[in-house]
Image 1 (cartoon, one colour):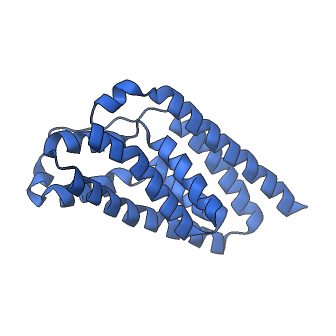
Image 2: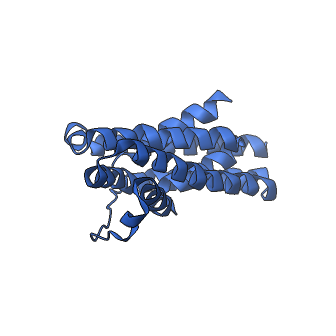
Length: 192
């Protein structure tokens, strides 16, 4: 029960450093200067988004055989390792159309949309399928997002000057490779 929570938290927290949603958190903090509604919007959007991703992971477990599922999970972890090494960019064109909704709603909508198809959403699907405990995975991935993004909201751009995003990405990639190797080992054990 604790392993899915801890692994999901760690992997997503590492994968989130330098991600577009962390950049979005920085941008929203600079624009609105109201951390509490920004954090509340991030939390709500992440719970909804990762809740849907966790449900998809649980559904995949119900329709795929264990051998095929483990193969897909192993490949997903290795692909995530490569994906996490690619720096993310946030494409902001000065669009203030969401601003009229207020800080919380703007953050909720922006974060929800930014997470669609993002590596942390894919990681949530994969981890939920792997551990077969989607609730703990959803809580862990949400906690990992908040661990990475709340400091961006609170500390702003100074955080970026103190951390090496390259090393954080390498550590996150290694974590995904290890998870992929463990999934392959588990797949081999299923076939024996």
